[in-house]
Length: 429
Image (cartoon, rainbow, N blue to C red; front, side):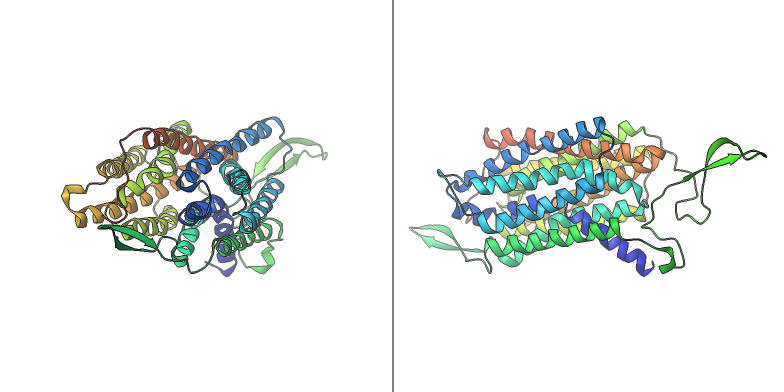
Protein backbone atom coordinates (compact mmCIF):
# COMPACT_ATOMS: atom_id res chain seq x y z
CA UNK A 1 0.00 0.00 0.00
CA UNK A 2 1.43 3.36 -1.04
CA UNK A 3 2.14 6.16 1.40
CA UNK A 4 -0.73 8.18 -0.07
CA UNK A 5 -3.17 5.33 0.45
CA UNK A 6 -1.95 4.82 4.01
CA UNK A 7 -2.45 8.54 4.68
CA UNK A 8 -5.98 8.40 3.27
CA UNK A 9 -6.83 5.27 5.27
CA UNK A 10 -5.53 6.96 8.43
CA UNK A 11 -7.61 10.07 7.80
CA UNK A 12 -10.77 7.99 7.43
CA UNK A 13 -9.98 6.04 10.62
CA UNK A 14 -9.56 9.31 12.52
CA UNK A 15 -12.78 10.65 11.02
CA UNK A 16 -14.66 7.47 11.99
CA UNK A 17 -13.34 7.64 15.55
CA UNK A 18 -15.37 10.81 16.08
CA UNK A 19 -18.66 8.94 15.56
CA UNK A 20 -19.40 7.93 19.17
CA UNK A 21 -16.35 9.11 21.10
CA UNK A 22 -18.12 11.98 22.92
CA UNK A 23 -20.85 9.83 24.47
CA UNK A 24 -18.47 6.96 25.24
CA UNK A 25 -16.06 9.30 27.02
CA UNK A 26 -18.78 10.46 29.44
CA UNK A 27 -19.83 6.90 30.25
CA UNK A 28 -16.24 5.98 31.05
CA UNK A 29 -16.16 8.75 33.67
CA UNK A 30 -19.25 7.58 35.55
CA UNK A 31 -17.32 6.22 38.58
CA UNK A 32 -15.90 9.71 39.17
CA UNK A 33 -18.99 11.65 38.13
CA UNK A 34 -21.35 9.73 40.39
CA UNK A 35 -19.10 10.31 43.39
CA UNK A 36 -18.93 14.07 42.74
CA UNK A 37 -22.38 15.08 41.48
CA UNK A 38 -25.61 15.32 43.52
CA UNK A 39 -27.50 12.68 41.49
CA UNK A 40 -25.16 9.93 42.71
CA UNK A 41 -25.78 6.54 41.10
CA UNK A 42 -29.06 7.75 39.60
CA UNK A 43 -26.96 9.86 37.21
CA UNK A 44 -26.65 7.07 34.55
CA UNK A 45 -30.44 6.85 34.20
CA UNK A 46 -30.66 10.63 33.62
CA UNK A 47 -27.88 10.47 31.04
CA UNK A 48 -29.52 7.49 29.33
CA UNK A 49 -32.71 9.53 29.00
CA UNK A 50 -30.75 12.46 27.54
CA UNK A 51 -29.16 10.14 24.94
CA UNK A 52 -32.53 8.69 23.97
CA UNK A 53 -34.01 12.19 23.50
CA UNK A 54 -31.05 13.02 21.26
CA UNK A 55 -32.16 10.20 18.94
CA UNK A 56 -34.50 12.79 17.44
CA UNK A 57 -31.44 13.99 15.50
CA UNK A 58 -31.45 11.12 12.96
CA UNK A 59 -35.21 11.53 12.53
CA UNK A 60 -34.93 15.25 11.77
CA UNK A 61 -32.00 14.71 9.42
CA UNK A 62 -33.85 11.90 7.65
CA UNK A 63 -36.84 14.15 7.00
CA UNK A 64 -34.60 16.96 5.77
CA UNK A 65 -32.62 14.52 3.65
CA UNK A 66 -35.77 13.35 1.90
CA UNK A 67 -37.34 16.79 1.51
CA UNK A 68 -34.28 18.97 0.84
CA UNK A 69 -32.02 17.21 -1.62
CA UNK A 70 -29.72 20.25 -1.83
CA UNK A 71 -28.30 19.69 1.67
CA UNK A 72 -24.50 19.48 1.64
CA UNK A 73 -23.46 16.46 3.68
CA UNK A 74 -19.86 17.67 3.91
CA UNK A 75 -20.93 21.00 5.39
CA UNK A 76 -23.30 19.29 7.84
CA UNK A 77 -20.58 16.87 8.94
CA UNK A 78 -18.12 19.71 9.51
CA UNK A 79 -20.75 21.61 11.54
CA UNK A 80 -21.50 18.46 13.58
CA UNK A 81 -17.81 17.85 14.32
CA UNK A 82 -17.28 21.46 15.38
CA UNK A 83 -20.34 21.14 17.62
CA UNK A 84 -18.84 17.99 19.16
CA UNK A 85 -15.54 19.77 19.88
CA UNK A 86 -17.44 22.68 21.45
CA UNK A 87 -19.57 20.41 23.64
CA UNK A 88 -16.56 18.36 24.71
CA UNK A 89 -14.67 21.54 25.63
CA UNK A 90 -17.73 22.84 27.49
CA UNK A 91 -17.91 19.60 29.47
CA UNK A 92 -14.23 19.90 30.42
CA UNK A 93 -14.93 23.30 31.98
CA UNK A 94 -18.49 23.06 33.33
CA UNK A 95 -19.16 19.36 34.06
CA UNK A 96 -19.31 19.99 37.82
CA UNK A 97 -21.74 22.96 37.62
CA UNK A 98 -25.10 22.25 39.25
CA UNK A 99 -28.36 24.16 39.68
CA UNK A 100 -31.30 23.08 41.82
CA UNK A 101 -29.56 19.83 42.70
CA UNK A 102 -29.10 18.78 39.06
CA UNK A 103 -26.08 18.75 36.75
CA UNK A 104 -27.81 20.90 34.17
CA UNK A 105 -24.76 21.82 32.07
CA UNK A 106 -23.62 18.20 32.01
CA UNK A 107 -27.03 17.26 30.61
CA UNK A 108 -26.93 20.10 28.06
CA UNK A 109 -23.49 19.27 26.71
CA UNK A 110 -24.22 15.54 26.82
CA UNK A 111 -27.32 16.17 24.71
CA UNK A 112 -25.20 18.02 22.12
CA UNK A 113 -22.68 15.16 21.98
CA UNK A 114 -25.40 12.50 21.77
CA UNK A 115 -27.14 14.49 19.02
CA UNK A 116 -23.94 14.44 16.93
CA UNK A 117 -23.20 10.80 17.71
CA UNK A 118 -26.70 9.52 16.94
CA UNK A 119 -26.90 11.51 13.71
CA UNK A 120 -23.49 10.19 12.62
CA UNK A 121 -25.11 6.84 11.81
CA UNK A 122 -27.22 8.39 9.05
CA UNK A 123 -24.89 11.23 8.05
CA UNK A 124 -21.29 10.01 8.19
CA UNK A 125 -21.79 6.57 6.66
CA UNK A 126 -23.64 7.65 3.48
CA UNK A 127 -20.90 10.24 3.00
CA UNK A 128 -18.40 7.38 2.70
CA UNK A 129 -20.23 6.04 -0.37
CA UNK A 130 -18.27 8.43 -2.59
CA UNK A 131 -14.97 6.81 -1.69
CA UNK A 132 -13.38 3.48 -2.51
CA UNK A 133 -15.21 0.53 -0.83
CA UNK A 134 -12.14 -0.37 1.25
CA UNK A 135 -12.39 2.98 3.03
CA UNK A 136 -15.78 1.99 4.45
CA UNK A 137 -13.87 -0.67 6.39
CA UNK A 138 -11.50 2.04 7.61
CA UNK A 139 -14.50 4.03 8.82
CA UNK A 140 -15.71 1.09 10.93
CA UNK A 141 -12.19 0.63 12.31
CA UNK A 142 -12.50 4.25 13.42
CA UNK A 143 -15.88 3.50 15.02
CA UNK A 144 -14.11 0.83 17.07
CA UNK A 145 -11.54 3.39 18.18
CA UNK A 146 -14.37 5.65 19.39
CA UNK A 147 -14.79 3.26 22.31
CA UNK A 148 -11.21 1.99 22.57
CA UNK A 149 -9.55 5.41 23.02
CA UNK A 150 -11.82 6.55 25.92
CA UNK A 151 -11.44 3.12 27.52
CA UNK A 152 -7.64 3.19 27.41
CA UNK A 153 -7.56 6.75 28.72
CA UNK A 154 -9.88 5.70 31.54
CA UNK A 155 -7.62 2.78 32.45
CA UNK A 156 -4.63 5.10 32.48
CA UNK A 157 -6.59 7.51 34.64
CA UNK A 158 -7.47 4.77 37.13
CA UNK A 159 -11.14 5.69 37.44
CA UNK A 160 -12.15 2.47 39.20
CA UNK A 161 -9.05 1.47 41.15
CA UNK A 162 -10.00 0.52 44.70
CA UNK A 163 -8.96 -1.67 47.60
CA UNK A 164 -11.20 -3.77 49.81
CA UNK A 165 -10.73 -2.74 53.42
CA UNK A 166 -12.33 -4.35 56.48
CA UNK A 167 -14.82 -2.04 58.19
CA UNK A 168 -17.06 -3.19 61.07
CA UNK A 169 -16.59 -6.80 60.10
CA UNK A 170 -17.38 -6.31 56.41
CA UNK A 171 -15.18 -5.57 53.41
CA UNK A 172 -15.78 -2.11 51.95
CA UNK A 173 -14.29 -0.64 48.75
CA UNK A 174 -11.98 2.33 49.20
CA UNK A 175 -11.40 4.11 45.87
CA UNK A 176 -7.98 5.49 45.07
CA UNK A 177 -7.71 9.02 43.67
CA UNK A 178 -7.38 9.15 39.85
CA UNK A 179 -4.04 9.93 38.26
CA UNK A 180 -5.60 12.93 36.51
CA UNK A 181 -8.90 14.75 36.85
CA UNK A 182 -12.16 14.48 34.94
CA UNK A 183 -11.45 17.86 33.31
CA UNK A 184 -8.05 16.72 32.01
CA UNK A 185 -9.64 13.53 30.65
CA UNK A 186 -12.35 15.50 28.84
CA UNK A 187 -9.80 17.95 27.42
CA UNK A 188 -7.85 15.00 25.98
CA UNK A 189 -11.03 13.70 24.35
CA UNK A 190 -11.78 17.19 23.01
CA UNK A 191 -8.27 17.32 21.51
CA UNK A 192 -8.81 13.94 19.82
CA UNK A 193 -12.16 15.11 18.42
CA UNK A 194 -10.45 18.25 17.09
CA UNK A 195 -7.86 15.99 15.42
CA UNK A 196 -10.67 13.94 13.85
CA UNK A 197 -12.26 17.18 12.61
CA UNK A 198 -8.96 18.24 11.02
CA UNK A 199 -8.68 14.79 9.40
CA UNK A 200 -12.13 15.22 7.84
CA UNK A 201 -11.22 18.68 6.52
CA UNK A 202 -8.04 17.33 4.91
CA UNK A 203 -9.90 14.30 3.54
CA UNK A 204 -12.70 16.38 2.03
CA UNK A 205 -11.07 19.60 0.90
CA UNK A 206 -7.53 18.69 -0.08
CA UNK A 207 -6.84 18.26 -3.78
CA UNK A 208 -5.75 14.62 -4.02
CA UNK A 209 -3.65 15.05 -7.15
CA UNK A 210 -2.63 12.05 -9.20
CA UNK A 211 0.67 13.73 -9.99
CA UNK A 212 1.67 12.98 -6.39
CA UNK A 213 1.40 9.28 -7.09
CA UNK A 214 2.00 7.15 -10.15
CA UNK A 215 -1.28 5.31 -9.71
CA UNK A 216 -4.86 6.08 -8.85
CA UNK A 217 -5.35 6.03 -5.11
CA UNK A 218 -8.24 5.17 -2.84
CA UNK A 219 -9.16 8.75 -1.96
CA UNK A 220 -10.64 9.29 -5.41
CA UNK A 221 -14.40 9.09 -5.76
CA UNK A 222 -15.78 6.09 -7.59
CA UNK A 223 -17.74 8.11 -10.09
CA UNK A 224 -18.37 7.75 -13.77
CA UNK A 225 -18.67 10.62 -16.18
CA UNK A 226 -21.39 10.92 -18.74
CA UNK A 227 -19.97 11.39 -22.21
CA UNK A 228 -22.18 12.80 -24.98
CA UNK A 229 -22.09 10.97 -28.33
CA UNK A 230 -22.46 12.98 -31.52
CA UNK A 231 -23.36 12.15 -35.08
CA UNK A 232 -21.42 13.11 -38.17
CA UNK A 233 -22.78 16.68 -38.10
CA UNK A 234 -21.76 17.18 -34.49
CA UNK A 235 -25.24 16.87 -33.01
CA UNK A 236 -25.58 15.14 -29.69
CA UNK A 237 -27.67 12.03 -30.13
CA UNK A 238 -27.49 10.23 -26.78
CA UNK A 239 -25.67 10.11 -23.50
CA UNK A 240 -24.00 7.04 -22.08
CA UNK A 241 -21.82 6.25 -19.15
CA UNK A 242 -18.30 5.06 -19.82
CA UNK A 243 -15.71 3.93 -17.37
CA UNK A 244 -12.36 5.61 -17.22
CA UNK A 245 -9.87 2.78 -17.87
CA UNK A 246 -7.42 4.37 -15.46
CA UNK A 247 -10.02 4.52 -12.68
CA UNK A 248 -9.26 2.81 -9.41
CA UNK A 249 -12.85 1.62 -9.13
CA UNK A 250 -13.23 -2.13 -9.26
CA UNK A 251 -13.53 -3.24 -12.84
CA UNK A 252 -15.39 -6.41 -11.98
CA UNK A 253 -19.14 -6.42 -11.72
CA UNK A 254 -20.68 -6.19 -8.27
CA UNK A 255 -20.74 -9.50 -6.41
CA UNK A 256 -23.82 -11.63 -6.59
CA UNK A 257 -25.96 -11.66 -3.45
CA UNK A 258 -28.55 -14.18 -2.40
CA UNK A 259 -30.10 -11.72 0.08
CA UNK A 260 -32.12 -8.65 -0.63
CA UNK A 261 -30.96 -5.37 0.91
CA UNK A 262 -33.98 -5.55 3.20
CA UNK A 263 -32.76 -8.82 4.70
CA UNK A 264 -29.33 -7.28 5.24
CA UNK A 265 -30.94 -4.29 6.95
CA UNK A 266 -32.92 -6.59 9.24
CA UNK A 267 -29.77 -8.49 10.22
CA UNK A 268 -28.04 -5.15 10.78
CA UNK A 269 -30.72 -4.15 13.27
CA UNK A 270 -30.46 -7.49 15.10
CA UNK A 271 -26.67 -7.28 15.43
CA UNK A 272 -26.68 -3.67 16.60
CA UNK A 273 -29.48 -4.33 19.11
CA UNK A 274 -27.14 -6.84 20.74
CA UNK A 275 -23.97 -4.82 20.25
CA UNK A 276 -25.16 -1.40 21.40
CA UNK A 277 -28.19 -2.23 23.52
CA UNK A 278 -28.13 -5.62 25.22
CA UNK A 279 -24.46 -6.26 26.02
CA UNK A 280 -23.58 -2.78 27.38
CA UNK A 281 -26.63 -3.04 29.66
CA UNK A 282 -25.82 -6.46 31.18
CA UNK A 283 -22.03 -6.67 30.93
CA UNK A 284 -21.48 -5.27 34.42
CA UNK A 285 -23.84 -7.89 35.90
CA UNK A 286 -22.08 -10.63 33.93
CA UNK A 287 -18.55 -9.61 34.96
CA UNK A 288 -18.43 -7.68 38.25
CA UNK A 289 -19.41 -10.67 40.47
CA UNK A 290 -16.07 -12.25 39.53
CA UNK A 291 -13.96 -9.12 40.11
CA UNK A 292 -13.41 -5.58 38.94
CA UNK A 293 -10.39 -6.75 36.95
CA UNK A 294 -12.56 -9.26 35.03
CA UNK A 295 -14.94 -6.47 34.09
CA UNK A 296 -12.18 -4.13 32.90
CA UNK A 297 -10.28 -6.92 31.11
CA UNK A 298 -13.39 -7.90 29.15
CA UNK A 299 -14.18 -4.27 28.36
CA UNK A 300 -10.63 -3.48 27.22
CA UNK A 301 -10.13 -6.64 25.15
CA UNK A 302 -13.51 -6.25 23.44
CA UNK A 303 -12.64 -2.65 22.56
CA UNK A 304 -9.35 -3.85 21.08
CA UNK A 305 -10.97 -6.70 19.13
CA UNK A 306 -13.70 -4.46 17.69
CA UNK A 307 -11.51 -2.35 15.33
CA UNK A 308 -9.50 -5.43 14.34
CA UNK A 309 -12.68 -7.31 13.41
CA UNK A 310 -13.88 -4.27 11.45
CA UNK A 311 -10.67 -4.44 9.41
CA UNK A 312 -11.01 -8.18 8.72
CA UNK A 313 -13.72 -7.96 5.97
CA UNK A 314 -11.14 -6.34 3.70
CA UNK A 315 -9.47 -9.77 3.48
CA UNK A 316 -12.28 -12.19 4.37
CA UNK A 317 -15.31 -11.40 2.25
CA UNK A 318 -18.50 -13.26 3.21
CA UNK A 319 -21.35 -12.96 0.70
CA UNK A 320 -23.48 -16.02 1.46
CA UNK A 321 -26.75 -15.31 3.25
CA UNK A 322 -26.57 -18.71 4.94
CA UNK A 323 -23.14 -17.95 6.42
CA UNK A 324 -24.12 -14.43 7.45
CA UNK A 325 -27.30 -15.73 9.07
CA UNK A 326 -25.29 -18.45 10.82
CA UNK A 327 -22.79 -15.92 12.17
CA UNK A 328 -25.68 -13.72 13.33
CA UNK A 329 -27.23 -16.72 15.11
CA UNK A 330 -23.86 -17.48 16.72
CA UNK A 331 -23.56 -13.88 17.92
CA UNK A 332 -27.10 -14.12 19.30
CA UNK A 333 -26.23 -17.28 21.25
CA UNK A 334 -23.11 -15.57 22.62
CA UNK A 335 -25.15 -12.54 23.64
CA UNK A 336 -27.72 -14.82 25.29
CA UNK A 337 -24.93 -16.48 27.27
CA UNK A 338 -23.76 -13.06 28.52
CA UNK A 339 -27.36 -12.31 29.58
CA UNK A 340 -27.42 -15.68 31.37
CA UNK A 341 -24.25 -14.75 33.27
CA UNK A 342 -25.93 -11.49 34.23
CA UNK A 343 -28.99 -13.35 35.51
CA UNK A 344 -26.73 -15.44 37.77
CA UNK A 345 -25.42 -12.32 39.53
CA UNK A 346 -24.34 -12.17 42.31
CA UNK A 347 -23.74 -15.91 41.96
CA UNK A 348 -21.05 -17.62 39.90
CA UNK A 349 -21.20 -19.78 36.79
CA UNK A 350 -20.90 -23.43 37.90
CA UNK A 351 -20.17 -22.09 41.41
CA UNK A 352 -16.63 -21.25 40.26
CA UNK A 353 -15.23 -17.74 40.36
CA UNK A 354 -12.28 -18.65 38.15
CA UNK A 355 -14.24 -20.49 35.45
CA UNK A 356 -16.98 -17.87 35.48
CA UNK A 357 -14.45 -15.05 35.08
CA UNK A 358 -12.78 -16.79 32.13
CA UNK A 359 -16.07 -17.42 30.34
CA UNK A 360 -17.24 -13.87 31.07
CA UNK A 361 -14.19 -12.39 29.36
CA UNK A 362 -14.22 -14.86 26.46
CA UNK A 363 -17.91 -14.39 25.72
CA UNK A 364 -17.80 -10.60 25.60
CA UNK A 365 -14.66 -10.65 23.42
CA UNK A 366 -16.16 -13.19 20.98
CA UNK A 367 -19.38 -11.19 20.83
CA UNK A 368 -17.48 -7.96 20.12
CA UNK A 369 -15.54 -9.61 17.29
CA UNK A 370 -18.62 -11.17 15.68
CA UNK A 371 -20.71 -8.02 15.97
CA UNK A 372 -18.02 -5.73 14.55
CA UNK A 373 -17.28 -8.13 11.69
CA UNK A 374 -20.96 -8.51 10.82
CA UNK A 375 -21.72 -4.79 11.08
CA UNK A 376 -18.92 -3.97 8.66
CA UNK A 377 -19.82 -6.83 6.31
CA UNK A 378 -23.49 -5.82 6.16
CA UNK A 379 -22.60 -2.21 5.41
CA UNK A 380 -20.09 -3.23 2.72
CA UNK A 381 -22.62 -5.61 1.16
CA UNK A 382 -25.29 -2.91 1.07
CA UNK A 383 -22.85 -0.48 -0.52
CA UNK A 384 -21.71 -2.92 -3.19
CA UNK A 385 -25.13 -4.38 -3.98
CA UNK A 386 -26.68 -0.92 -4.18
CA UNK A 387 -24.96 -0.08 -7.45
CA UNK A 388 -25.64 3.56 -8.23
CA UNK A 389 -27.78 3.82 -5.08
CA UNK A 390 -25.01 2.99 -2.61
CA UNK A 391 -25.53 6.26 -0.70
CA UNK A 392 -29.24 5.46 -0.37
CA UNK A 393 -28.61 2.02 1.13
CA UNK A 394 -25.85 3.26 3.43
CA UNK A 395 -28.29 5.87 4.72
CA UNK A 396 -30.78 3.13 5.55
CA UNK A 397 -27.98 1.04 7.02
CA UNK A 398 -27.36 3.90 9.44
CA UNK A 399 -31.08 4.13 10.17
CA UNK A 400 -31.31 0.43 11.03
CA UNK A 401 -28.16 0.64 13.16
CA UNK A 402 -29.93 3.34 15.16
CA UNK A 403 -33.23 1.43 15.26
CA UNK A 404 -31.55 -1.74 16.47
CA UNK A 405 -29.52 0.11 19.11
CA UNK A 406 -32.63 1.89 20.37
CA UNK A 407 -34.75 -1.27 20.55
CA UNK A 408 -32.00 -3.18 22.36
CA UNK A 409 -31.67 -0.42 24.96
CA UNK A 410 -35.46 0.01 25.24
CA UNK A 411 -35.94 -3.69 26.01
CA UNK A 412 -33.11 -3.93 28.56
CA UNK A 413 -33.76 -0.67 30.44
CA UNK A 414 -37.03 -1.76 32.15
CA UNK A 415 -35.74 -5.30 32.72
CA UNK A 416 -32.74 -3.97 34.62
CA UNK A 417 -34.28 -1.02 36.41
CA UNK A 418 -37.85 -2.19 37.15
CA UNK A 419 -37.51 -5.92 37.74
CA UNK A 420 -35.43 -8.06 40.08
CA UNK A 421 -34.01 -10.22 37.29
CA UNK A 422 -30.58 -8.56 37.44
CA UNK A 423 -29.02 -7.98 40.85
CA UNK A 424 -25.77 -6.16 41.54
CA UNK A 425 -22.99 -8.01 43.32
CA UNK A 426 -21.12 -6.42 46.24
CA UNK A 427 -17.85 -4.89 45.06
CA UNK A 428 -16.00 -6.77 47.80
CA UNK A 429 -17.50 -10.25 48.12
